Image (cartoon, rainbow, N blue to C red; front, top):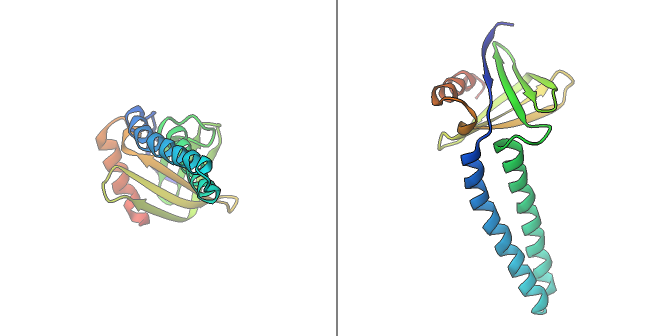
Length: 151
């Protein structure tokens, strides 16, 4: 298959900072209200608030460590576009080639996008990419225009 483009991704420290400024206060606030409810005698509300704090903590940690700082083994490092497939090389060294049911999901603000597809073994995979992971703004816009055929 003819290769359309290859993009090496970098860590997005600025985006990670903004995500941390979003998630950390929310988790601390929910945790403190949970503790207040627990010691105030309303344990049912405390359980719900602690569940929410834990859930949001996991979402934030995955977003910051996985997509922004690319520290997890499943974090994408290289993105390669071909005529009828998309290949993603993850930090763990595995190269995942998405060949069927490719779908592209841009966000409304134009700062990130995601795509989903089936790899060669039939497993559904999904990836999220942010504008700060690309070396130049033109690379990000070029990639979005190439991926728009999968919309």
